[in-house]
Length: 133
Image (cartoon, rainbow, N blue to C red; front, top):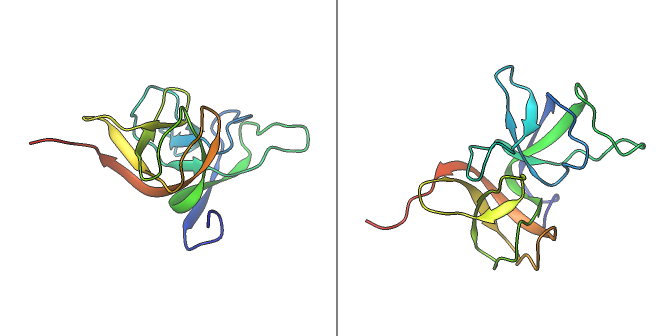
């Protein structure tokens, strides 16, 4: 289903080198450029970087990139998680199990077997994650 179903993908300008960041979460800097979501677990993110690396394996600062902001895509997992797990970003831009009081971005469509595993993911947009009363 990922990358073939109805979804919203936008293009932007890389605000920093995004080499080896494909299938990880990204955010926007003050200039509206796409940057790594690596400021800390649970930060507000824009979506998942889908742009492949150039032939030389890089995504340089200033390159046009594609970001899935809503719908199914693939995401790199921070750890093993079940399907339907509610997800936030980890400090290294991967899909981590959301915790109360932080920003979630969507849910896993399929289980993630281990850290670094690519899993189908549904981007629903940033929302404040709250459980309990």
